[in-house]
Image (tube, rainbow, N blue to C red; front, side):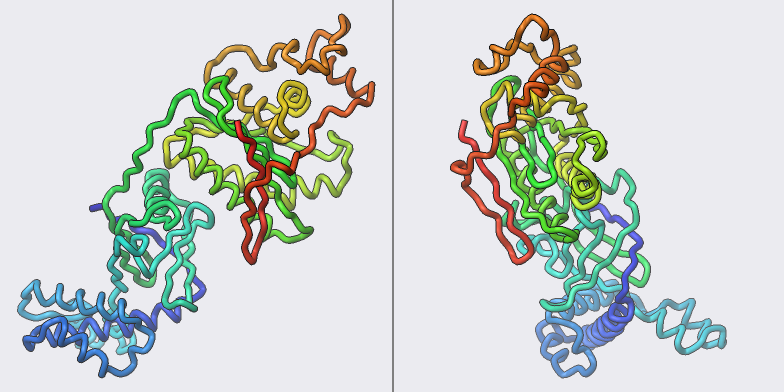
Length: 415
């Protein structure tokens, strides 16, 4: 078993202190009843008659009874709650009555359950928000904010969170929690995710303010293509972030489904002047869209499976993609980004651009003798004012992810 100790911060320390006080009362009560010869069943009934434990649900009470039994089973001659040291300090008047009461507060000790996503009272939300949710009741949840995690903790906790995701598994990996006023302790077996990636499989991603195109390939073979459409509203930060994280989760599932090894995404440093789109476009890209959070979240998810994410120079990727492939603009660009990343970063050859003669037949008439590079070809098409971007064909729509917060459409291209 492995135990990780983490400091935390919360705005609800008063609530936690009250819980610990009531929990400690049940532990001491149970310990004394075990000394009198009662069993667990008897003590559960007796606890129903206790006053001032209304903040404790039935599971908290059961955990407190188990802790009282554990203390009793140690068979110590005399148990002093709060430690002998502080007990004698109080007798000598070195500490106050209030201080000895605080020392007598026990940490909350909540056991885990395999069929309750590892632990029914705690939810790991570390990948997205770096916090742990303490579910006191159906209505009342407390957020425990964590500091920046050490690298060796990150992988363990991310794996533990994904294993205990109800959408991924019916049963989780049990973990127990101890919580005092400063630290949270997670105890669990080292989580293992069985994943065997295919070294030649990868995902290319094209990022845009209101849509994300992805393509999955095995070497040069296309396996699957999707286009996600975000329903963005101005100045709705939470909604945009929620949609991006939902797409990140979806891409993780695709990554796992095809046993991919790599993800290649645009290395974007966008300025409005470069695109001539003005301040509104710049705001959508750099402020509202929060692309860095999306990329970081996705990288955390695939690292769990030993996957690697690389950023790729996107120069002319949309232009090349649309002239070579037959999907929509974002997917076509993702195919070029994926090809470029795999060829240059993984295979380490110099095929940053594909052969220019790979363009579709309808564009070959413009490949005249004055065109010797993709840059020259781009300038020629631009000067001729020809439209090269392929719009989204909505006949491929197969899913709408909808909730109170958001709605995400994605379009699936059968291969």
